[in-house]
Picture: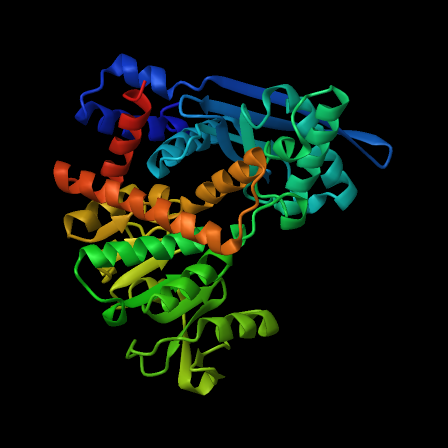
Length: 428
């Protein structure tokens, strides 16, 4: 069991908690989930019943309703969902939003299902969990292999059941049981941009604390999906010099490797949509010309002599095999767990500032909070209002963690966990 994801996470939290003076009993009580739910999900396909396993772990609701995504993946298991629910408890506390932590999942390869089977599975999962969900109980969202369409099915199913049972809440409030819905189905305008925007705000604020100017800072971004694209777009608008971006097929930068050219992010994005990859899309100042650029590997991107490195694709990409070649002085973890524990220890000891994922990408769950608030309060937010509120919350979260780090003389990861534990264990 000590090799489990949950146990490894618990071990690190116990280490930080002990440093903050909490007893083993207090920490063990905190780490134990409030409730672990396992359900069987029978789905009829071609006249045959297929059975899938579903999980929902409700870790803590001390600060508010359980909050966390639902993933559809063939490797989903109880241990993984327990660990993810624990991280959500910490993440919502760091962002200082009124939620606890939860997580859910179904052990399935969604690519093997027809759309009808996927809808049936989504609705059945909701039916099985109906009694433990609700805007004041547990508020799921999309996660790996789930999206607004799947969440719409779940939300619609929940509302239909709730109305049949005579629940007294309005439709709008009932739709607050799920976040990550499409805008047309009681969703939040600005949710798509939220995670990348919040990360760019964190970058801006951390550079400000170093008393440096964005226009003098070079940034390399690994990953050009939703998060990487919006991070690049907003960081560029803040004045940062985005010198290379990548997708799974490779990275693009200037042909002389001077790392001094600010890429045109919107042009690259449009080019990527057209060509299917970033590699042929070297765009600067409104013009795309691959002859002015060159393609490098994702591995080479990580070791470029840039000021800031933003891994926003896969976990574990900065590890013992390449950590000694990392030249960036700041790393913003937009992916989940892109820097391994060994690499984190080595780099922080070398003076690299690493903004941990639990803080850097928390604008996603913060946007979920705004969507939930919009539904439960019945007040529609504009995209501008959403981004403004995200900017405030993310700036305050970074300020709190940075101040704690300086006060304790520790790295930002330890400070993040320390603040989360204080907010959960002491605000009773």
